[in-house]
Image (cartoon, rainbow, N blue to C red; front, side, top):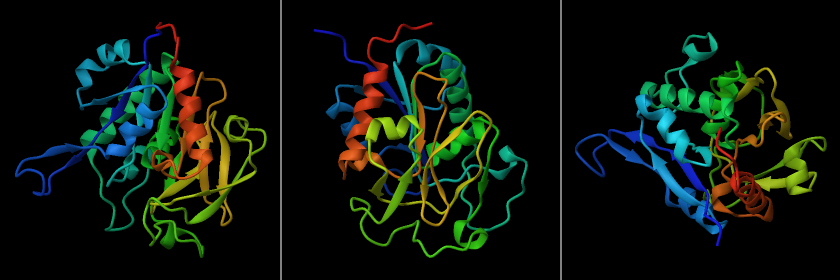
Length: 242
């Protein structure tokens, strides 16, 4: 029996006193179960910048998760324009550091929602700080229906790796974000876009697997979500560590 790939997942950091009176890490269960369902072993990883090399020596793939946070605009040479930005400096710094080195080592990387935006920052791109204030759109990118339901359509770039994975020109997705990519980073290809022009997916076609999606495929609502995780786990199997 072949060894199951170990998949590192980044964590959110919370300070509200619901789980504990002290700061606590957070990760929704379905991030882990979606990895397990397709043959991987989920490994949550804490913000230990001194141990990134050791972490990457162990894991076979990296998932940069979403969460209740925004990337500080200073990372794309802007100042905060709005009061509703919720930045978490320790999380962002760790994710930038581990993402950069994972990509350098050609370890498969999947970015989800805020994780997609983080990948874009690593490649030198920028973000819209608030979609409703910066863009004219009628789409609800922070959907009002439950997150385990779809809310709008996304069109795929037929020349993208994501299209080769999903093999559909249009898919339905859920949506839980108030920011989005403004300028794609150098070397990234837009692989998915909403009807209002909001960028919903990016990829680096030179890597073994580097894909970011703005929605939350870990809910495994549609066949397209399942295909993303199946392809990601496949890319991590049998990978020779550098």
